[in-house]
Image: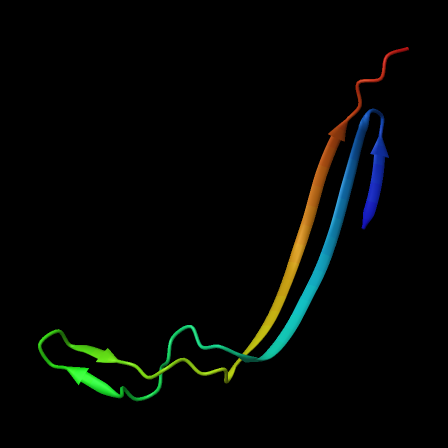
Length: 73
């Protein structure tokens, strides 16, 4: 993070990297082959949710801020 001061202004710049991983989570949707199929509605009945989902999360955040001071003498 960088901080600059110019007269009554303050400027803040920053960057943040976030990552995470998790295994054995329950599926939100089961994308495997359908267990049953309803031809009239074209809907597939999926099986029970399983806890075999894996997730990987990566994020880069950039920060920029400007402040102005109202100090009186």
